[in-house]
Amino acid sequence: MGFRLEERPNAEDVEHLSALSIGHFILAGVALLGAVPTLIYGVAGAKLMDEFGSDLSMAMGDIAGQPGADPFGGVSDTMLQDMSTLVTTLIVSAVVLAVVSAVHLFVVGWQIRQRRWWTFCYLTGWGECLMFPFGTILGIFTILVLSRPSVKRLFGVD
Image (cartoon, rainbow, N blue to C red; front, side):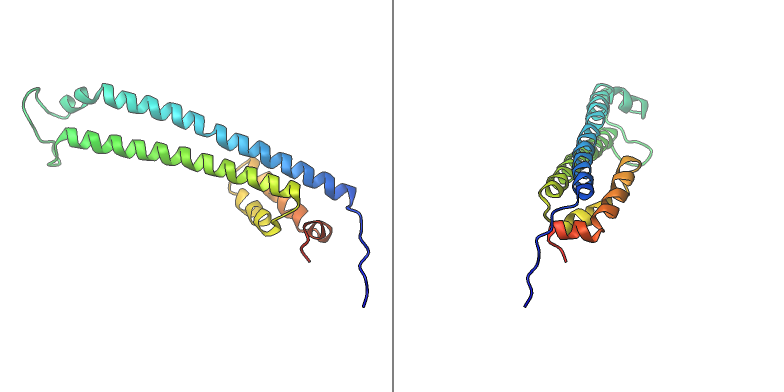
């Protein structure tokens, strides 16, 4: 029947965890900013497809006022509409992925700051290694810092 002495957190661990949380907040901002060019180029591409749609169908062999078929057996307007749908889907997917990853990284930074959800933060560190180059650096440091026994005690993991 022993009792456990309450130990004070190591100043180095506290400093490293603070730096990790700030790094996650910054990477969340970078991930969110990654959606901006995708959105800009996507809107510009959709506008170009809309503007030059009639020229494209004419270039594919359609004569104005006469329905025609392309060499592949489809109607060029249908192909253009399908292409527009595909581009729109890809743009929306890329923007949603960027926003979801930014929110995820923000939550990880917040949880590191609160010293909770050790497993979630640790596994995110492994996943961040795929986000070259900044995520790789942050992911490696996240793994190294969260693997320390003293940091695990701060999170309440034994």
